[in-house]
Amino acid sequence: MFDDSLAHHFPEVAAALMRDPDFPEGRLWRNALESLTGVPSVELHALGWPSSPWFLMPGCRRSACLICLSEAPYVTAQCVREHWLQSWRTTCAIHQAPLVEVPAVGAAWSQLPRRSRKLHGGLMRRPDRQLAHLIEGWNSVPGYIREAVFGAEVELMGAWHEHFSNNQDHLEESGSILVWRDLLAFSASSWATTTSPPVATHALPLALMSGSTYFRCPSVLPCAEPDLSLRSFRTMINPAARRVCLIAAMDAMYEVSSKRIVGLKRQPTWGWLRVLPYLPRSAWEFLDRQSQAWPAGWRPLLNRWRSAIRV
Image (cartoon, rainbow, N blue to C red; front, top):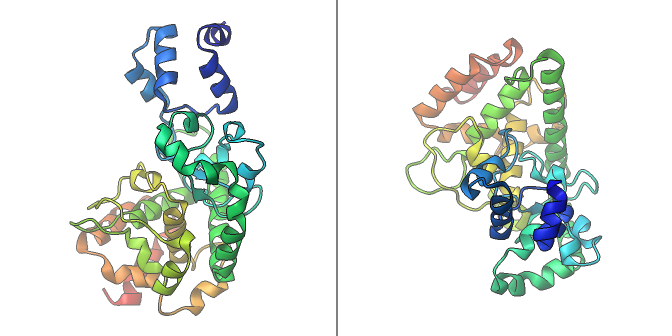
C-alpha cells in the first residue's frame, strides 16, 4: 500500500502527514511523492491546489486560532483545522475567537528555515501567552462589528445551503452565493494603478483600524478588476484583511440580508456607502455586468447604491 511504502522509505514525511493531512508545501513531501509515484513534483504541487475558489491558496494558509494551538502539547503536535483553510472563515468555529496570522502550522512548521523557527519559536510554543492580548483587542472592537463578522459567516453558510438545495449538479454556483462571491472579489481589489489597500478598508473607520492589531490591513497588489476565482481574497494571509472585506459585503447587503446588524446603520460616517465614492467607472461596470446573474431579489441593490451617492 502507498501508506506503507511512504512510512518505510520516508518515515518523517509519513509522520508529518499524519499530523497535518493538508497538502504540505515542503520540499521533503514533494520529493518523497515524486520518488514513490514517478510523477514530477511540479505536477504533484498542482494537484494540491484546492478545486474550490473558496479555499485559501497554498502558501497563504497561515490563519490559526491561538486557543486551538495552545491545546497542543508541543509545536509539532499542532495541526491545521479544516475550517481555517476556508477563505471566508476569519473566526474559530470552536472558540469563536478571531483567527490570526501565524508563521506556519503543523507539517509546514518543520519546513520553515531554522532562523525563522528560532525567531517565532517562543510564540508557537506558548501561544497562550498572547491570548490575553488577543481577547482584549477583540473585545475592544464594537459589539456590532463582531456581530457583523459572525453574521457574515452564518450568511455565507446559508448561501451555500441554498445553492446545494437548488442546484443538484453542484457544478456552478447559484443563488445568493454569487452575490457574496462578486462582492468579496470586488472588496478585495484596490481598483488602483498603484499598490494600495483593498477598497473595503474605506468601510471601516480609521480609528478602529489603527486601534486594533487584528483589524490592521496590509497593502495588497493592485487589481484593476476582481478575479472571480477570488484570488485577491484568497491570497490575503492576514485574516483581519479578509474580515474587513466580509464586513463591507455584509453592510452592502444590509437591505436584503436575512440577518440585519442594526449597529451597522448607526454609523453614517462609514460603511459600504463610504466605499462607493472611491470607485472608478470600471468598478461600476463590473457591478453592472455581474449583477445580471444575481437572483432577482438582489439585483435592485445596485440601483440603491447608485441612488445613495447620486452617481
